[in-house]
Every structure is written in structure tokens, then in C-alpha cells.
Image (cartoon, rainbow, N blue to C red; front, side):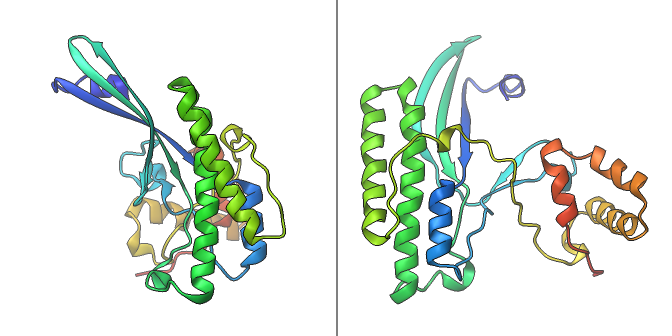
Length: 232
């Protein structure tokens, strides 16, 4: 990122270090047990390397809300470099059909879910903020505990504050693959999907392995969950 940005002539530059996390797993399980009919998805941060024309290892951020943890400034080769460290939660339950509903059971779901998002976000911020300000870190810890207390008032399952979430790296990164129609994807990606489907159907494991070899190691397992694409 820094090497790329330094090629630009701008006198002032800003870099964002974005920490993308999901909900605390134990809180997510608790929500799903209480509201099993509610759909929780991770559509805010999506790896797009294999559907990008340039094949870059990049993440598409779709309408995320950032929480700024800290900012530092340095001077490098007469340029002012501003580093922002931010946190975002890659989780969503407000789907298109529910955006205008905020009463009754839907309001209860939304309020409970909001508390879980706040507890998870503040837990992460508390750990990251220590490099900038111990006082701010303690304030985030207080907010996380407050959110957990609010959750405990609404649920028979009692939670306690911990710092496990910021240390976790999930091996399962679910991706929403969108439509089943081939025409909504770039042609080369749709062709790869069609080739994959045909190879699986014919037990052509050499071709299957060849396709997997082109994918990121942490994305390879997801190919086995791809649905078949239909024509235009």
C-alpha cells in the first residue's frame, strides 16, 4: 500500500489500516438461538480477487461503518503521511425487506443485535487503542461491558467480557456469491465456474485441482459450495 501510494505526486497522503471482524462467536450463537428465523449475513466485506479483471487480492467494502481507533502522522520524503486505524464489523441483519420495519419482534431483534455489535466492536477497539491511549482503552472496555450487561438483561445466558475476539482468525470466511445467473458475473469468472461445474460432474479431478491452485489458499474450500450458474 505504501509503495503504491508513494508513486503519486500528492503532498499529503492518507492510509487506512482496516480491521475487519465478525461478531463475537458466542454472541452470534446466542442471537441465532433466540431468533432462529433471523438471517445474519457477512456482505459488508467481500473478497473480489477472483471476480476482478486485475485479480488483485483486495476486499470490496459494501457500505461499512468505520470506528476510528487512532491516527498517527509521519513525514516521509517531504510528504505528510496520515495513518488511520479503523474497525468495522462484517455483519448485517437489516436486509432489504426489513429496512422499514422497526416495531414488535423486529425491533426486539434489531435492538438485541445492535447490543451485540457494540459489545464486539468495543471489545476490539479496547485492545487496539492501547497503543495510543490507555485511558481510551479503558473507556472502550467500559463501553463493551455496558453493552454486555444490556445483553444479559435481555437473555438468560449470561456473558462476561473477554478479549478473545480480537485475537481470533476465522478459517471460515463466508462469502455471498450473489445471483445464480451467469450474466451478472464477469465473463472470465462465469467461464471458470462453468468449467468447475463440468469438471465436478465428470469427476475430472485434475481440472478441479488446477482451478483450486489459482485460488487463494483460504478461499479454496468455498469452491465446493458454489452453486451452478444458469445461462443469461
